[in-house]
Structures are given as C-alpha cells and as structure tokens.
Length: 362
Image 1: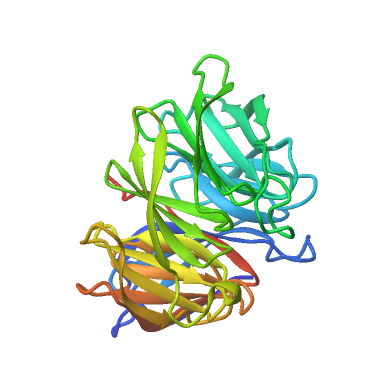
Image 2: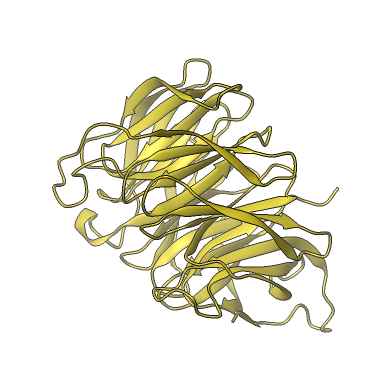
C-alpha cells in the first residue's frame, strides 16, 4: 500500500492543496497496491498525504479525468484491455462506475474531451484508438469506434506496426490527435459529435525512427513530443483549424545518454508555460528545457530520485516523478529558474505509473 515520507512543515501543520491520484500497475496483478490511490497535497511543502482513497482495479496504468475533476478514468495494461470509470466524491473517495472492454490490446492512455462526451483509449500493443460515449453520470457507455492506423517504421523490433501511445482531444474543437510510436506519426482525426465515429484529417509525420510517445501543447500553435526511440524532444507547429502538425526540429532529451541508451517517457510543462520537463528512463534523470526561445533550450538535467521515471507531473510549485522500478514518487520544489530541487519527501508505492491532480478547487 502507499506510504508517505516527509513532513508537512516545521510545526507539523498542513496547508491543504489539490487532491492527487496515483496509479499502480503490478507485474503480477491482484496485489493490494494494484489500482488508484488518493492523496492530498500539502501546498506549502509539496508532501502528498494519503487520503485513504483506493480503487482496486487491475493493471491501472494511465489515469485521466474530465474537465471538472468529478470523474477519473483508468485503462488496463493487459491483453484484454479495458477502461474503468470512477466518481470522485467531495471527500476524495472513489466510487466505481463500471469497467468495459476497450477493443484493443495493451491499453496505455486514456483521455476525455472538454465536453465530457467521449472517452478515448490508446492501445500500445495492438495500435488501436477506441472511442466510447460517456453518460450523464460519467459512466462509460456505448463503444462508438475503433481505428487502427496503417504503416510501420524503420525499427524492426519496435515499429512493425502501429503502437498508439497517447491521445489528445484538442480543446475547443472536434479534433483528437493520436501519437503513434510505431508509424512515427501524429494522426489527426475529427470526431463526429453525433455518432462518435472518427474521420482521418491528417497524417503528420515525425522523423523516421523517432518513435513519438507523449505530447504536450504549448500555447495555441506549438506541440512538444517525446521521441522514445531516438531520445529527443521534438517540436511541431500546429494548425488547430486544419489539424495539421509540421515537424519543426528536435533536441536531445538527455545529455547523459545516447539515443540507444535512453527511452524518454512523459513530459510536462510548468504552469507558467516557461519550462518543460522530460523524464529519461535510461540515465534516470529529468531534463529541464526553457521554452522562452523558438526551440526548447536545455537548462539542467537532474537525478529523478529513483529508477525508471515512467511519468511526471507539475502540480503548483512542485514536480512529482513516478519512478516505476524503485517504487517511489519523488517530490521536487520548482523555483523561479524552473530547476527542480528535491524536498526529501516521497511516496512509497509499488510500480507507480501515473500522477494525476484534480483541478484547483473554486
């Protein structure tokens, strides 16, 4: 089960911040740590204090939420992939709203459009993108569509076919962008509001063999994407009206590892939009990039506080790094220079996969 280390402040008092949920997907499913665990952030120190909330669900890899933060969604990273829905109550507890088969294999990412109409699930193993309608209660409803991008890449072991890794519903539009490691492509689809069916809009190519994994928008017309296979942070110029993304350059994701010795995973952008953080699973680091210039500029690379950083998240003035193999979520304070500094606090949790915060309470 989850445990927290590190105090709230010098007097032992806590300054309650946002609610945070961390998923754990065990290699051998069914253990007591499997599922989604709830915490309350100490806004002063960044410590994550267990709230007691725990939704036991097998293979919970990524955690998504709706815009309001009243519902959480997870996907099952198993051959019989599925997606599960939870209602978030005012005390932070989670109520199961059911689970469905998602249509593909090895689900690795879930997301919800701004209007909370559809749930999108990306499947790494099979390469599929699926669409489910969401009900008025937040439960997962009918299965609307299942698409499989065509193509492959030059890496015979990792790119023999599509490997969907991330799906981004574009805010204030009917578009969803699928980041596909297997075909080196950002696929743009238009979602029919009535049927939930997907129509291909554009196949936006990344460099051959780059293996695009995860995406973060910066402003209205800039996308940052990690290249898992070539160890890069890529940039694309994005046209929201057309759904097109043009590759605009890349920088190494790490100075401590070569392209064949690293596999960048998640990236996050600071809440002021000035910095980007990239988790590097080869050297076990977090690289920091300034976004002040036309291209990302590295300003630091720090130890991640554990082994195999699978995910990271910026929550207020703090960075949280989920270190999968060392079983801990490390806490870092962010200064004005954007460089993370360890607070000494951490959460001990077997195989943490994803850190997700609820919106700021009104």
